[in-house]
Amino acid sequence: MFLQMKYGTVLLQNFIRRMINEWMTNFYGEDWFNISSLDHPMTKPGIYELSLAEKDHDKFSEAQRLGFELVETQVGFKTKIEEVNLIDTDSHYVRMAKDSDLEEILDITTKCFLDNPKFTSRFKNKNFFTKDHFIKYYNLSITNYFNKKNSYTSVVEKEGKVVGYYMIIDEGDNCYRGIMTGVLPEERGKGLHITLQNKCFKEFDLPFYTINRTQINNLNVLNSHIKEKRKLTDIKFIFLKRISYAN
Image (cartoon, rainbow, N blue to C red; front, side):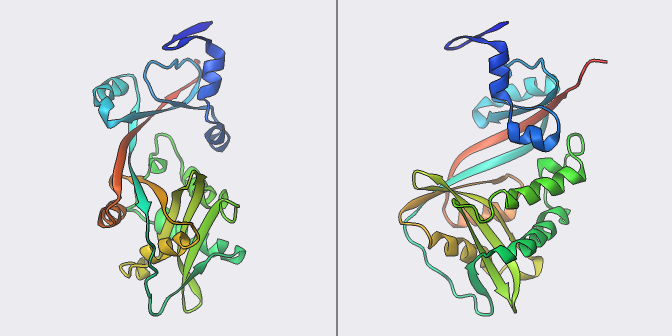
C-alpha cells in the first residue's frame, strides 16, 4: 500500500516505521508513534503522540473528536548567554557532580517530582501511565545522561549533603538543552537554581544558546525564565490516543 504525501508517494509501511519512537516503545512496552498531523495514518495498534503548535488551534477539537486527549502543554524558551556570574551562596557549596552523587540526585528527583502532589506531568495521567512508568521515566531522564561526554551536572551541598542539582546537555552548534533540575523543598527560595545553572555555564565557551522546555502550569520555572528574560520560542500541545488490537 502506498501513501500520497505532499512531496510524493511513499510505501505506507516505511512511513509508519519512521513514525515509531523506538525509545518510548522500549520504555512503554507498546508501539509508540510520534505524529504532527491528523493526516498521518493511524492503523497500527499502539500509542499515538500528537504534537500541535499554537497556530494549529483549529485542529484541537478535531483531535479530541478522533479520540485524542490533551495530556500536556509545553512552553519552549531559547536564550543567548553572553555573560555568566557565579553568586555567593553563603552556607552552600556548589560544584560539578561526581559519580558518587547519583543516588542523592535520584533521591532529590523523587522528592521534587514523584512525591510532589503539586507537580503535573503527562506521566501522571492514569489513562496512559502507571506510577511505575512515572518513576521509571524520571529516573531514566537522569541516568541516561549522567556523566555522558555531552552532559554536564552541577550539585549544591549543605553540611556535606547534596540538596540540589542541575543537568544540561550539549546539543551541538553551540547550543545546550536543559534536562532536569531539582532543589529540596527546605532549600528553595535561596537562588540555588540560578547558581547551579551558572556553575554549568562556566564550563562552556561564550557566547552560547540554551534551550529549555517546561509545562505551562509549572509556574515556579516559568517565573524563573521570565525573570531571566528568556525568549519564548513556542508553545506545544501534546495529545495522546491509544489504538488497541481488535477483539
